Image (cartoon, rainbow, N blue to C red; front, top):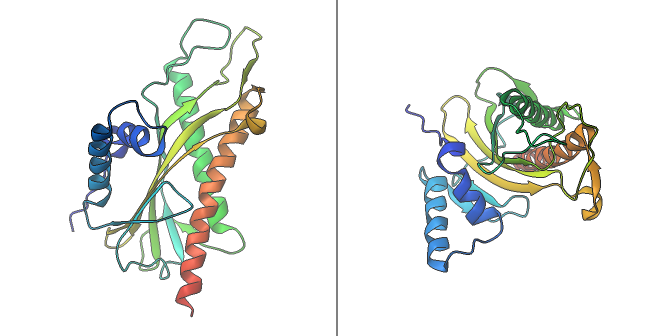
Amino acid sequence: MRQFHLNFPKFFSLTLCLMMVAAPLQAGAASRADSKAAVKEQLSHDGLEQRKSKDADLVYARPGASLAGYSKVMLGPVDVAFSKNWDPKRPGSNFRITAEEREEIRSGVANLVRDEFVKALQAKEGYQVVDTAGPDVLKLKVSIIELYVNAPDVATAARTKTYVTSAGEMTLFLEAFDSETGQVLARVVDRQESNIRGGQLSWTNRVMNQSEGELIASGWARKLRKALDKAHAVGKQ
């Protein structure tokens, strides 16, 4: 079976985030409508239909599909793509952060998000995370797009403190597949921005950034776990 995967970070993330889950652009209504139509076409091109959800900005699911038959989850590495507009300077200087520092941030976020998903899925003897496909294995492809870190904490000789009201923002793009057939069952998109101490100015550092990232990622992971638990509860009736 031929499998089609959206190359979401490269092909679509900027339009989606700006037009659908971020603040409205200053463009005309016709332009926004065209962009929304393009987003819908890409997310539903292979038979998925939009569902109303209180847990995410956009949810598309395959009609008639159920998660009730999946007791295990196959979760690979998390892909992370920075916002196109993210090009920060090192604290206390006019120098941009290096490619190595960008990669350290990217890989750190990837590991953080994956760890939170694994933790939530396996909690309380929940869903085993496995490496191989099977009839009861749900395959998840998790990507973080439009990552924007307001004050990256990188090594610097200058003793500079940066105060912000938000550590940054990132958008989840999640695809769920049947691990054996490769058929896509659902797509979820959700943008989240950190809110430090109710929007008050706070000194941000590596610990604060990680804490805010974990808070967002754990929220996404708990919602996924809730969806799986709900499907299994319905399936037992």
